[in-house]
Image 1 (cartoon, rainbow, N blue to C red):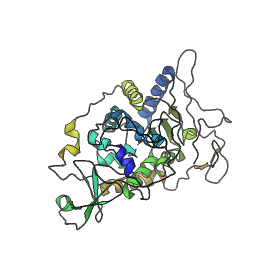
Image 2: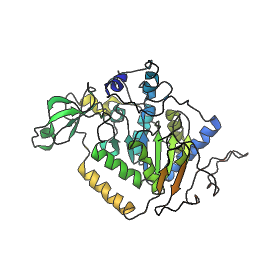
Image 3: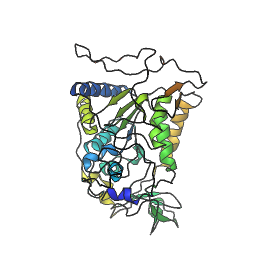
Length: 373
């Protein structure tokens, strides 16, 4: 069952802020904010989506820090009542919408903290996905670092050896003497180099980052959306709980992620696909060797784009003090920013019902609350 993943992790006390009450926008605000999000997506040149456990709860996989999350209930000696197996879980409406938006060139990259394999099952290509914390359906060679799709979820957590020989020869034609390990990180492991590099470069290039179903408490993954802000891009957060970076967001939507993206797709007039098992690589892994390694050519191509946009460019430095809500944004030379250069999107509820996007007044403080570091 999916709770077994949390059970397999090493003991760790600092699991972040747990069980914060969820909040919901009014229907009127929800509709207006979805219109604004659709507008931002439609106008952006490079969109990166950052996904967390909240996008998989509708598949029956519990989150970690929600009111009924695994770690929240753990403090009370309880376990979630909803707990589907990773093998049986299927992609949610959100997973399928994101795949479609990538195919339509509306979303250019997805950075995921999830290990449930639902992005993989949806048919999303490896070229457009960074998996920062691993994947229950992926093995990795300890020598050549190639990754391969499994037909069933791993039974271990924390990069433990399965004893199975590396299958690289079937893909590259060159033998490898390595052994396969599970690809799921434990607390002490470093993030996979290529995934982290791709995630950071895409986030820096992006003029729009969208965070879905994550409180952004785990670093470094939770800080990657700030790379977009540092290079003058916009940040949207969709989550039911307050997040660590609400005060840096241009738009915050407090509603179910599935409903938000369904509304956005309707506004963009894009059909929502349904899950098709024929697109799921896991279903073919029993009879074929399926490589899930990031292509080095994709890394090199992105590096050129990253350098072209970001090399030599001074980015904003965002300083977060330890005290809650004590946040300051400074320029690279340390001079305090007057906030007029930071465009905040404000949903104004005018009497005529029109949606208005306007800069905040000069001395208005940044919106939202920040969770403690």
